[in-house]
Amino acid sequence: MANIGLIGAGSWGTALAYELSTNGHHIEIWSIAQDEVDMINQDHEQKIKLPGTILPESVHADTDLQTVCRDKDLLVLAVPSPFTRSTAQKMAPYIRYGQLIVSVAKGIEEDSLMTLSEQIREEIPHANVAVLCGPTHAEEVGKGIPTCIVAGAKDEQTAKYVQNIFMSEVFRVYTSPDIKGMELGAALKNVVALAAGVADGLGYGDNTKAALITRGIAEITRIGIAAGGQAATFQGLTGIGDLIVTCASMHSRNRRAGILIGQGKTPDEAMKEVQQVVEGVFSAKAAKKLAEKYEIEAPIIDEVCAVLFENKQPAEAVRDLMLRDRKVEANDLDWN
Image (cartoon, rainbow, N blue to C red; front, side, top):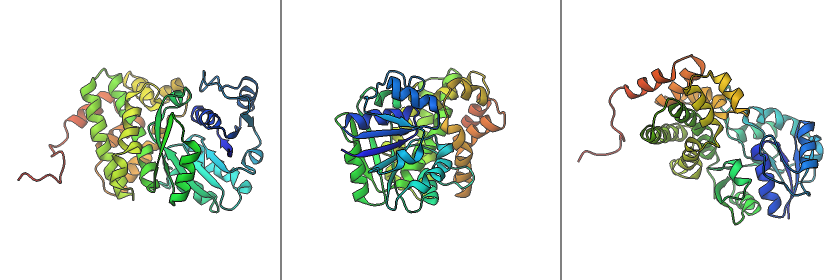
């Protein structure tokens, strides 16, 4: 049994608290909000963000960050990506040398273009930072529905430790050394999922969705490899796997927000209706900047940014995607 501090009491943090506690680990959850702490301690449920997932009475929540960080075998950082850096700054004074921190959110910082683990390492350079990501909706993990995910770390021993901590009969964990590729795939797919949701909101069909997923993973792969990721990663769980589930499921905040935008709501109206952080909106500008930095063609990302930030009409964006210059599908295929 491990002593684990879980930083963040949103839907994903709560789902992981459920998974880890059913694995026999001792869990303390940190939230900045006293009402969330009271809800978890009294009702053993995150009734707002993950209703229906009942946590064991042994799971305790606290607003004292030092208490939750102290004397832990493992810390899981599960706050929304826009708050990763600021939360890491708050954690830093309480982190011992070599403390293992597992980042489980998804995003890219707009100004620095740093992934979440890079931000954590910058703020807490004495920590050992790993990542956990893949096609995993909190709503399903919190019900014990079978799920596969990937633990990434710089060294194999750390990755295997995280794998052993999280692994269960309903939560299968693979390992990977390609942290950069994992995080880029996890963040960039949220932008493509917004596009898939817009297409749904416009009333388009399965053909359109398939095209967006397929051409979307092509954009993600081009950018990801240029930025330092490995090609195989984008064909795996944290690439195409994560993209499929985020584009296809109504559990996806990004897809839901995209649907609302396709139906005529502004991005701000859509995010308010979804009532949770829509990671793709925060990653879209960073995705476009990454593509520009490495001179990568990324038309889907470009059009998503035009809709989100330039008031372009969604139907016009789709039309412009369809009427781009004629292309071959794969440049490395030989006509002979």
